[in-house]
Every structure is written in structure tokens, then in C-alpha cells.
Image (tube, rainbow, N blue to C red; front, side):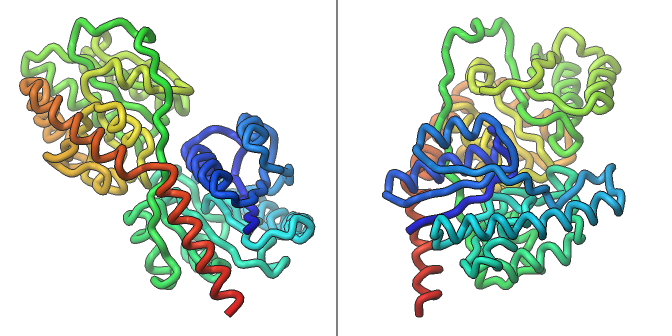
Length: 380
């Protein structure tokens, strides 16, 4: 079996990590993999290490950020998507690939290349789009979502929340939910010295969807109750939103308690050095960092929305709070602050649960079974 993958970047983000996990598992099972990328980046070094052939084709995304929605840009991206699908189709035929696999919803060129080369196409959805990244499809959500379904033999969703979001536009029998693998990243113990205070950590791009404002407000409430607590904010984002967060910290008088670390390529040392992990995202499609924290045995408080609510069993492997309710979040933080044995119990339970479910072998096996079914139906 030979599979052609289309990556939306050559970077090292969540979807790219998921792709690498899958490629490692497939290669280990003897599957021949090829990869298209739109430009150079660190992903290519990882592909070389796996012995995977790759090719650069500068296809655009077929989504735009909400604040940059000029019609001319949308039309130009769509034209480039269609035109660049032609050389991609030729390369797919040259590689003699059996299946074409688009790794995110943000790229449409792979689906059209599969159509031109008469290969079955798989679309792997790792995101909601607007709800988590502020992306808007150039064709509009309805048209693009329906096209995703029509141009694919199977659509994989990385959580039931994502599957539900696209369900109105894609035939139910085409959608499969497959949780990705998560391999723990290294976390050197000497990265940060031991805390002299109780520290919460929140990791993610700084934007309104990730809930940093909610975390700051909750910490302010806990401090008001007389509890010595600090918050480490890991991530970077637009200057205007970062400035708004800094102003919120100042308004609450938390300058000595809330620290902004900036971007961390590997946030695990920061997470493991903390006492409590917060996942305040309003709509997290999956939540790789949540699983990573679980694998490190860290207790997590997450919002009861999106993929987070699927990963955290309230009271079993962590705690859930009502999304948009910082007082409820503050109550949960205070509870875990005052109950160290409960923190230890939940962290241990989370580690055991995650280690059993998010393995590379399981991920590769589920995808291989799906791909084999697609090829069997095509030959029938």
C-alpha cells in the first residue's frame, strides 16, 4: 500500500505532530508513504529521518483569517488550488499511490489532485476552523464542508466534537472518529527549579478562543480568597490581544503572580514544573497538550466543551468546569489547592488512562484498517 499525504505546512504544530505520529506508525508497518508540503520547514528533516520521499508544491490554503477576507484573495487562492492540483495529480500517478490523504481541512488541493488522478481520497479533520483558529473557508463553511464529504471516500475526525460540527454537511456513513497518538516529549527535570508557591500553567496560542482571559480572572478570584497562587501563561499571539491580557493582569493587580513565558517549542518542562494544568479553550478540537500533561501525571482542569470534555473524565482523570464561568474555574482550582491527595490521585489516574489509549500502534492500526477498507471497496 502506498499513501500520498498532503500537509498544510512543513512546521511542527499540532496537526504536523499528529501526521508524524501516523507516518512513524505506518512506516513501522511497512506502508510506503509520500508527502507533499507547500514550503520548506522542520517537518522535512523528520521526513528524511523516516526515509519518506517528499515534494514541495506551493499550493495555498483554501481558508482565510476572518479579519483578512478580501474577495480578490479568496478567488486567487481558489484558482491556485485548482491549477496546482494538476502537477500534484501527475506526481501522484508517477509515485503510483493508492490513496491520497489530506491532513487538515485547510488544504483543498489534495482532494482535487486525487480526483484528477482517479485515486480515493481521505480527509483528516483536525480543527473546527473558525471556532478554534478564526479560519473561514473561501467557499463558505457550508459549500466547503459538503465538498469535503463529496471529494472523500472517508472523512476522519480527531474527536467526536469535530465530527458533530461537520455532521450537517457530510454523510454520516463517511465519517470516522480516530483519536491521534501522542508520544510524550522529553521533559528535563532541571529546566525549572522547584516552585516556592502553587503554580497553574496554561499553554496555547494567545487568542480569545484559548481562554487565557478566563484563567487570569479565575486566578484573581482565588487570590482574593487569600490563597497564594501563581499563573504561568505559555504561548504567543497577536500584539493587540497580548496587550489586552497584560492590561487585564494589571487591572487585577496580578503583576507579581501572572507571568508570560512566550512561545515554547517544548512546553513539557514548564507543565511538569507546575502544580496544575488549565485547559480553558472554548472549542478545542482535540487537545494534544492535554494528553501530554496527562501522560506526565499532571492533574488538569478543563472546560466542559469541545474535545476537552472527551479527554477529561470529570472527577476521574481530572476536573471539568463550566466554560465561560471563571468563578466555577476558581472553585475547582481552590479545591485542588486544598486537596493535594486528590491532585495526586487524579494525576495518576490520568496518566494510566492516557498511556493506554493514545499509542502510536493503536493509531496506525486503526488508520491502516480504514485505508484497507477503502481499497477493498474500490476493487469490489
